[in-house]
Length: 350
Ligand code: SF4
Image (cartoon, rainbow, N blue to C red; front, side):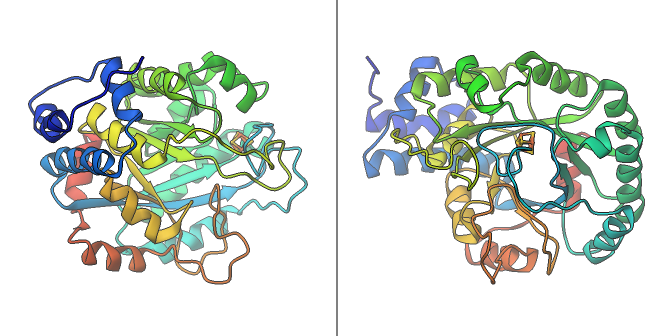
């Protein structure tokens, strides 16, 4: 049976985490099972207190460039899986260079270069390394790479050319669920790629998918699985059913919300970057996620971009509210502001 956490304990939680308290598995279960409005608000209050202690009112801004939507994999939850008959694109190096020109001086702290496991790059990974070099040359900013399970030699070369962050989401550390989600892909291969990158001086990001059959027990297992990798950024995203995929008609029964998990992540990983993604609910959703303890806004698209996000709540909408100016305007209304670049370099340990 899950032990309840008393309101007074929730009131003290933020201070205690700042003072060095580590949450037990029972604590995690108790927090993830909170339901009343009052309790859940107290959880968010605690998470914000911890976030503000370490980062003040300063937020980081991550630019998302999804440069190839081709992929050789069949993840059951993903719109871009190779079985889905959709329109795809792959930007040329020149198009990426042009995108960088638009981004100069825009105020981003990091550029996230994301692709599916595109055979064009997997057959000749030096093409990918060259792309990292190009973006570094154009912008001189920290670079996150999200290329899937790249081989070690390519990860090393990309690091030499200026990649700082390696994002690779396990989605779940519950192996049965993993096999249903990341169909035909090695669980250990993902863990090892992330571990290798960390050893080679990358910062690493790991991530969970929620709303996809994960109950409290499997979520605790996943949180502990992420913790074992000593990550620098930890994310959770809600599964959004995608047209044309095996899980198109899936309906979730669990009440485990992304916001609750964000708050728990902040309490478990007080100094980590935790994303407030625009990909699911745009800028209104960013506000909720920041209020739950997040501190880096992700999936901000280059100005006037036609590029894709990942879950893409706004697919097909004419107005896309995903630009950096709108984000900064809303941060100001919240009493928050973009952090100086030097703060971000400190997080990276540069
Ligand atoms: S989640 Fe990534 S690896 Fe899986 S199908 Fe989608 S793009 Fe490919």
